[in-house]
Amino acid sequence: MIRELSFWNRVSFILFLLTASLSTITLAQNYNADSIFTEARKIAFQGDYAKAIELCHEILKNKPEYDEVALFMARVYGWDKQYGKAAGEARKLIDKQLKNKEAWQALIDFAIWAEKPDSAISIIDSALIFFPEDSIFFYKKAELYFNKGDYTKSKEIIHELLTLYPDHQKAKELLQKIKRETANKILSPDYYFHLFNTPFQWRLQIVTLDYGFKIRKGTYFAGISMGDLRIDQDHPAWQKPAFQFKLELYPRINEKQYAFVNYSYGINGIFPRHRFGLEFHQQLSKSFEISAGLRYLIFPYTDNVNKAIIYTASVTYQKNQYWFNLRPYFSKTRYGYGQSVAFEMRKFLNSDDRFATLYAGIGNNP
Image 1 (cartoon, rainbow, N blue to C red):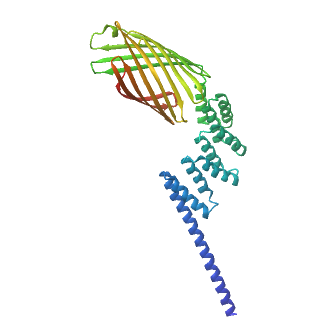
Image 2 (cartoon, rainbow, N blue to C red):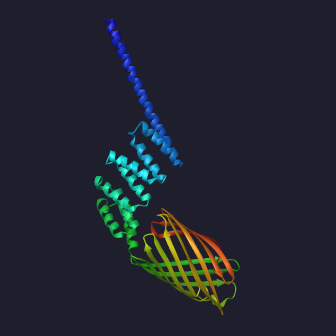
C-alpha cells in the first residue's frame, strides 16, 4: 500500500513538473512575442520600416493568430508606400473576421494613400454592410466625395450622418465647407501696406475689392484696386491715387489641372498700364501642386514705354491646416535681367477662407 501510494505520488509529481514547464515555456513565448512586437513598433516609428516588417513576420511565423501584429504590419507596409502588400494583409484579417473594424479602416486608408478615391468609396460601402451606422465610415465617404468635387453626393451623406449623430462636429464643419464651395458669388476685400527705406523712404497702400462667381468649369473674378504712394521726393505721377481694373479667370481643365488667365488695366504710375498673365497648374497629389507661366507688363513713363516679361513657376505643398508655396521670378526688361524668389506660408483658421499668412521674398523684379 505504501509502495502504491509512493508510485502515484511520483507520477503526480512528474505530471506537475511537466505542466509547470509547459506553462513556463508558454509564458516565455508570449513574453518574447510581446517584447519583439514592442521593438518592432519602436523601430517602425523611427522610420526603419523594412526591419519592423521583418520582426512582424518573425512573430507571425510562431504566432499566426496574433492579429494585432498582422494589422500593425499592414500599417507599416502602408507607411512604406507598399499599398498593394498593405491591402493584402488587411484583407487577410477581414477574411478571418468580417467585423474587424480596424482592418476595414486600414484598408480604406491604403486606398486613400494610393490616391484611389473610387476604390476607397467602394471599400467603405462594403464596410457599411457590417457597420451600417458607423460615423467614421460615413464621414470618410462624405469627405472623399467632397475632395472629388461631388458636393451634392457629399452633402447627402452628411445629412444622413447628422440624422444619426446630430452633434457630429466634423460633419457640421464639412457641410459649411460645401456651402462655401458651392456659393455662386464671392466678395473679397483686401488691404496691403508696404514700407520701404531704400533707396528712399516711401509708403505704399493698396485696397482691393474683388467680386467673383463660381461655375462647374472654374472660378472668375473682376476687381478694382486703389493704390496710394507717399515718398520723400517729388514725383507728380505717384503723388495722386492710382487705380487698377482687373479680370481673372481660373478655368478648370480637368480634375487635376486648371489655368490662370489675367488682364489688368492701370491708371497712374503705381500699376502697369497693361498686365497680362497666363499660368498652368498641375496637381501631382493631394498635397503637391506645381505651376509655370508668365506675366507681361507695360509701364508708361512720360514719353517712354517700358515693357517687362516675367517668367514664373511655383511648388505648393499643403498638409492639414498648413499651406506652403515657393515661387521664383525671372524677368527681362530693356535694362537687363532680374530675378527674385518668394516664399509664402498660410495657417488656415477654421475654414479655407480664413487664414494667417507669412510672406518673405528676396531679389529684384518689376
